[in-house]
Image (tube, rainbow, N blue to C red; front, top):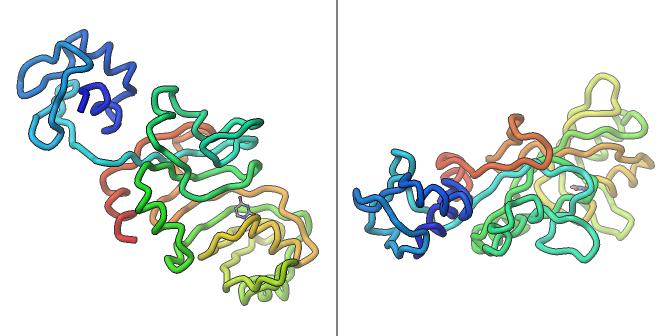
Length: 234
Ligand code: URA
């Protein structure tokens, strides 16, 4: 594998940054400063040191993003900006895809990965991966409606939702919703079934991952080793 690609996929830096750093002698391969970004390395056996720290090789890339409004959860779109458009150009073609969908106006946590098998597993209905959302609704939700919400609602297409969690703040028009499934526009449609309307929706967790408040909307970071280990338990 090319050295710059290796540094990119392990999350040390982008491939463009890697090229500059290699030129300035900041990367060693088996103790020898690397001279070219396109040097071939074996990720399994070579010891790569980046800015003084050994680099741990991972086969897959995992990115936690704080999705802003107005961006679609897709790999490409003819009209709107996608979550992939928020990554540096040299990362866009690396097979990354958003693991699950958030509506264009929904903000918050979205996982991007190139691990198709894990992505598939996390999204499979039988996995029941827990997702939590902070929401605001147009009208307060009564205790009776909250009960209907949590015991399962019939949506406009006849689908009966699985029991969901809802914790309301005192005003009744905001709080946290927990789902273990992910039907199209699910929360919006659940509120519509209660003759109400979602006015703000932010995903705050996905399985073991929680939204990183150090990330501004549109920012992203690589998952930590601990986060990856937790995710892989699913
Ligand atoms: N439910 C919705 O209605 N929209 C989302 O983006 C996520 C869950």
